[in-house]
Amino acid sequence: MAGLGEWVRLDAQSASPLFDQLRTQIIDVVRDGRLEPGTRLPTVRDLAGQVGLAVNTVARAYRELEAAGILETRGRFGTFVARVDPADTVMAAAAHAFAETARQLGIGKAEALRYLDAVLD
Image (cartoon, rainbow, N blue to C red; front, side, top):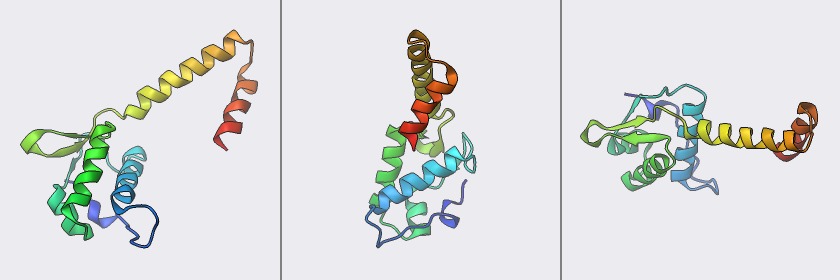
């Protein structure tokens, strides 16, 4: 089971709600590989105790992560990092659509990437 309480850093003075800070930190560690697919997470109650949050705050973060496909709940067995990151599927589909549009317009790779750089900066 992952020791999330060891690395979660919450700022009560932040404009961002505590559940959202927790949610984004879990997403970050899933995406950077510190929490691998299939890793079991602490129960809502355990994590709330580890990081000093209300149980409902942690439950909301877990619910939103589950709705986004980042986590999956397996009934009484617990909550786990999903086996597939939904961003992979969505971003791959968007990349294919972007590349196809560029091809149809006769835009080469270098020029197409300039459009992405302009939007992402």
